Length: 512
Image (tube, rainbow, N blue to C red; front, side, top):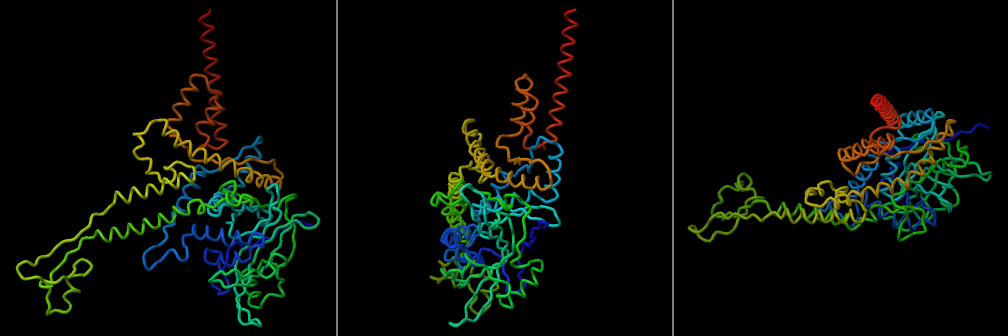
């Protein structure tokens, strides 16, 4: 029996009233589908964190009053993500043929984009899923945020089962007690069957609740059985057939991996401090929950300050033309001119009012918020807000180096945390194509100025205290690919050999 893998559509379809994306609002459906063991974690803890990251907290933000979300966490996540992937990716391999193939496969399948997105999703939800898929016998990777999948993980950290939800379908089904909403989740389900073979199939799970309130109404047999296609309402079956024609519900197929489901987790942190026994990372919203709302509040105050500091004039009513009812609308806009009672004709005058704009006070408070964010994330303040490095010349060299070291340590920690998972995925890819494994190289942002590093390394290399290989990798490791580094090393070795030969020939001529 030939092995096949199920290729499933990756986006929802919103033009039909039955469908809906898993965004921060419709995610209520997703949380209702959580397994019993993880239900509190997903519906209470994770729901709050994801909503905070996505930018809207019901009962906190208010459009009418102008207290709107600024989405600071998304900006910080983008900055940290760009810092880790600043110069792209590369691979290390002992065989040029395997290295060349890995580079070509990564370009063809946009692997860089997939792992960059997976890491950003890991920042958002603490954990994300990097999943291998196959289409037309070609493998490619996709990233999934934690609010679109449920994973079963053993004690070694290996995924032994996963459900990745693709679409949410809501249908109103009459029951004996009245009308009740049922929410159906289309998912790709991967698991090891009773023979230990890695399998995949498409399934539909159902939960019942009020979508608007997200009350604690449990799913209907979600953790036990999926719903058979014949048992689905006619509208739901029609929706699936129309929008996902490639899906065959309930058909088990083999995955092309020997001992893996082709799924690997990426994390933002090692664990969640308040729930240490869970195999997940901590979302950024859990770390910076207070600072996020402080920032929203400061932007709200800032708007009020600017509005209060606008110039206005108190105009006695004696100056208004009482005979023209439209005079105020045409000439004296009440936003800028305020009518007041007249005392007497001789002492009446227009009085200006304008409060000082406390720009420096607001700037100081905003910078304090940025610094608190950097402190909690264990990165330098300039990594959160680059302008915080202004005035760095007034600090000592030791202070500047110490600040760079904080972000450099964070970058290395992220690489050590996630590179093994990416390498396991790459091993599955390379073996599938009959190639030897390669390992990922994340070319992160340099924390020390390039010119400064080049000068120091050049002086050490020129003095003969550094090998060509060490010089190239230390100086150009984040800017040149492995192939380009090899060419530079070869050039330096040949130049050095030629220079040594000329020096030796000159020495011998002196001896003679």
